[in-house]
Amino acid sequence: MLKRMLLLISLLLTLALLVACGGGDEGSEGTDEGGETTEVEPTEAADEEEDVVVDEGEEEEMAEEEMAMIEPVRIAVVMPSAITDLAWSQSIFDALLRIQAEYGEDVVEIAYTEGMFNVTDAAAALRDYAADGYDIVIAHGTQFGTSLFELAPDFPDTTFAYGTAVDTGADIGLENVFAYEARAEEGGFVNGVLAANLSESGVIGVVGPVEAGDAKLYIDGFVAGAMSANPDITVNVSYTGSFGDTALAAEAA
Image (cartoon, rainbow, N blue to C red; front, side, top):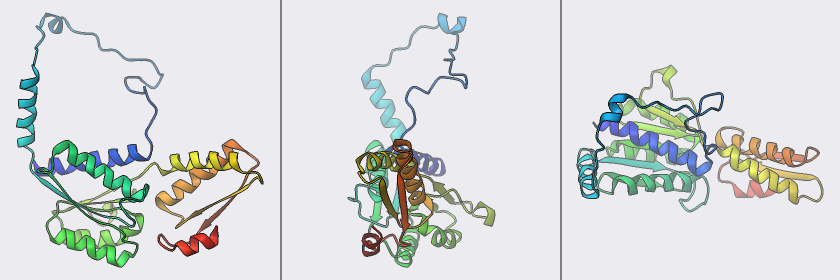
């Protein structure tokens, strides 16, 4: 039961994060590749069955019984910035809070460490959470991947996750690492359109930390958005090589 619950929460967490960063098209459910709605014809047996009516009291009782069967899960997340950054770290933290609100604080326990710009410090925090027996330990940043791969074999019963990434370490034998990818390019696209439309010179710029992960996705989306708004726009792209050096970012700008 616990393992199934861990996988379920990992899935919900990833879904919540993706929705926070940008969702898909509406109205796409229930259609095949040709765009036609596929309907299922009711069978005669189904027509003959009487409707089963469940009142609200019974529904609540059933829900309470289902919740009682769920084993408590402890989740810890290490983030590079603040949980109030209105961006990367807040997106994962808000997603966790949504899951906790859905299942209850007695079922989902959340612990977090924010402001972990230093990868070495983040690795120590991740190890501490795993050693403390947390069921799911999340390293919210591509830069933490190497540390996570070194840590995961020491705690085979712990579920680890990190992103933006697609490599789960399966090629080196890891079975307890999951990867997720945010839709950062969608937000970048919108900002690129805005920047191109506001530019009077026809030259705009964007600064990122490293040319990898969600940072590259965002900047690629920014460039695509700007070009869609003005094909003649010039977009200057700079990477500082740091997730926390704001002075370098200001200099690049």
